Length: 234
Image 1 (cartoon, rainbow, N blue to C red):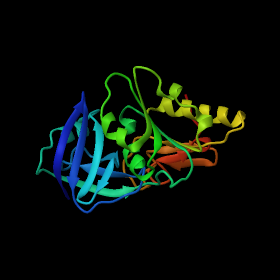
Image 2: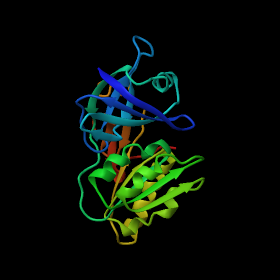
Image 3: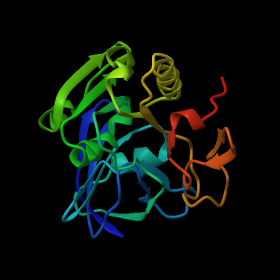
C-alpha cells in the first residue's frame, strides 16, 4: 500500500502520478497498480517513470475504467503497488538513442537518468507533454508533433537504440534496425512492448509475444526485447 503524493494532469488524458514508499526498480520494469476493491478485476501495469528516495513515479494515459479511477486520485489517497516486475532495458555503453512515441515516453525518462547524454527523440500525435523534463538529461532532444519521430533517427549513428511506443512504431523500428544492419552498422535495438497484462508474473499467458524461438511472455521475459527476436503479425 502506497500513498499518493501528487497526480498531475499533463495533457488530454495524460497524468503524472507520484506515490510515496520504499520502491525501486530498473530501467524498463513496471509495477501492477490498483486503487479499487474487487472491480475492475485486474490491476493495471504501469512502467517506471522515475525512482526517488521517497517513492516512485508513473505516467499513464486514461484508456479505460482502471485508469479513469487513477485519474481521480488525490494527494493522501491509498494505492496498491506490486512489483517491480519484468526484464527491462540493459545497462549499455556507447552512443545511445532513446525513442518514445506518446505515452511510450514513460519508461525513457528513467533511462535518460541512468544513461546521461543520450540523444532523445519524443514523438506525439497531437499534444506534447513532459518534454522539458527530458531536456537537461539529453545530449540532444528532438520533439516531433504530428509526424513520425522515427524519421528523425539515423539508426546507423548509434550503438544502442531503446524504443517504446505503439505497435506500428515498434515494427517500424525493427525494420530500420534491419536496414542499418544491411548498411553495415549493427545497433542493438531494444523494444518495450505495451502488451495487455493480467497477472504481471507470467502465469496467465495473456501477454504472449511471438518470438523467433517461440512464444514468450511480455511481463516476465520482457517487456523489453531485442528487436530481432520479435515476430510482428499484422
